[in-house]
Image (tube, one colour):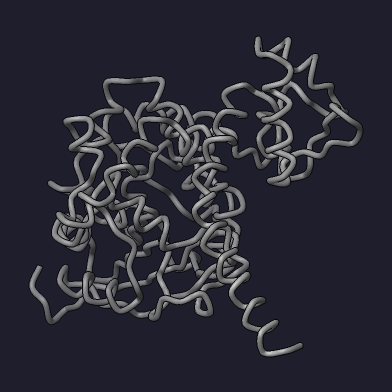
Length: 361
């Protein structure tokens, strides 16, 4: 290969990186449209014709065919014969009945309420404040509290995204729960993950600590899991106080929702509630020390830097490196003893911390 050919190949590869990244937003909108039309459900287990799918969707066949071919180009379906489509393994994840369904997560992430924030990412970069608040006049959780359907979609999406049984299995394999008798899940959502952990560790009794709305869902989960004798749901505000006395305090995907000052407040409340022998286990993504394509775990499902920016524009939160977590926890009177990456598909690490006895509560 000549030097000119090498240069042209390198330039073509560079252009592909930029253009593929830019076209990502177009793919997002196409997939969102497909989920709102329930295309995966309509295609089902066999091949389906564009004309019949269009009739079911109430759209012209020509336009739906264009969407279906776009989905095929993204690897979500395949055109086996002209105008006839079958789901791929990836496309099947957009069905409701798939055990690993991502339908709710896709619907949430492509919802116009959340997509619109990205149009104002420049403002968030300038101010460090969430674009969501400026766009909608209130923080995201307040906004959802007045919109039950959106809140239900959010909680369903988060549960599906984290895949509680698989996550509980991965956490249990990487962490010794046999030392503990009681665990409090701070900001534990609907209690699905704690229920999965309790099912694996029969010596544990648990508390889901959540808002009033979260507690209502958690009590349903606890009852459905047959854990009423070992688990309870308690309502409260983790900026004010956390239930006292548990051997282990467990937080998953909570600290990243907040910038440093509110995050330290939450961690201080946990520290104040902990007995001397207590521990805190945080389960969240941990960013590499250096940001470049070579440092990323390419088996991971999500790009952590895109989710970090999503935290900024939506919540004003952030993802952190191991050193940043260590410094954050130190401000709250906690000392990190270990940071253990979980399997790439879980997209998280375990941050194990103990009370720092040299720091007053």
